[in-house]
Amino acid sequence: MVDLLIQGPQPAGEYLGEKAETAFKRPSLKKLAKQELDITDRYAAMRLLNESKKSNEILTGLFYIDSKSESLNDTLNMVDGSLAFLNEKELRPTKAQWNEILADFV
Image 1 (cartoon, rainbow, N blue to C red):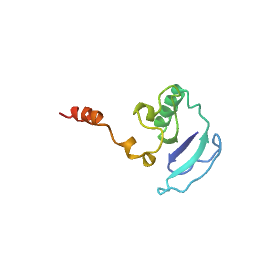
Image 2: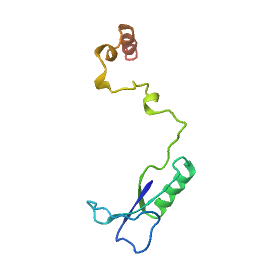
Image 3: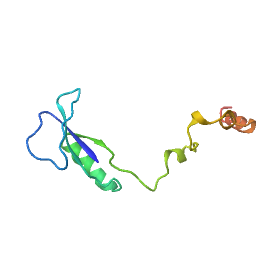
Image 4: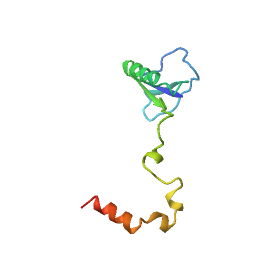
């Protein structure tokens, strides 16, 4: 789903999808339309962003997701749960791990 923001007075006419106005701090910005987008199509997302740049539009929302890429937690090798619920043993590195960490700085 992509939201379209446009500067200036709201043009008359119909828009794709559902039309809704939203109050912004800058009254010159208006939310005009929501449109369905295949977020797995990289080229469609790039086309959409290029078209919005040419027409001076600001888009918000999710444009593209690569379903084959690793999650950020996996990439950073993080734990599955919240750090707030881990005990001291799970949070504190062993002496060997600590020495390995320090070796990177020496």
